[in-house]
Length: 303
Ligand SMILES: Cc1ncc(COP(=O)(O)O)c(C=O)c1O
Image 1: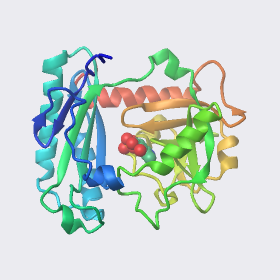
Image 2: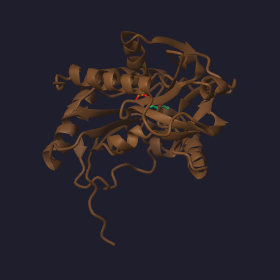
Image 3: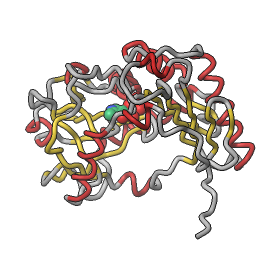
Image 4: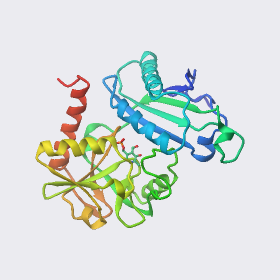
């Protein structure tokens, strides 16, 4: 059966693929074999990428901690992201904001863990496609979240400063939440503290104080999380990075999630606890609007 071509532009080691689904990576690539890759995701606003420098700083850190020997400097990868975004807009028009994912693989060798086997075959792939999120009214209704029945990634096994392509535990948590009728999942760490969601950081507001799990809880060092912690005091909200227990979340007034592509999404329910049924709660709405305005302002696109 003929499938319509995906609306996306894919760049593999500097070459734009004619068709995004074209085979371009060998099955011996370690990203495929072992999840031996690191990655970042950014998005555009009115055609302009946001926070690329911050994401590439984190990518650099992931590379250092993951012993990746990269053949290029970060400025090269940044330029390649921008070139692929531009290529996408030239091909498909500028009507939509895009999602841009850059994946760096340690490369391909013969089967086996030694990185020497893959030396010289390091690979990067950049995928640019439309941002596919629900419309604003749907987002404001909130998402429902399950507490996963499995731990988040153990930081003694894998530093959460590494944004790696190895998401199996988070994927399993997501599938299990979906099967239970929830939109997504959050995780406890091995000490029983709440850490993060499958692809997002978490926050709650209680009595005018904004709380989020400490970095030591085993969370990805979220770029949006940091922006929110910086801006909240300007709105008169005290912030705290905490060891978060499940009961703290369930007793909170409002909770929300954050990520670079979603910004802030309100959460309407965690397990059986319902936070709101109609309007997005006030602090969440306020922080959400302010964050969005700040981003647009920094790009010079806010009126
Ligand atoms: C596990 C996890 N936590 C948090 C985040 C949010 O991070 P950021 O705000 O830097 O996008 C992500 C984003 O991909 C993630 O995968």
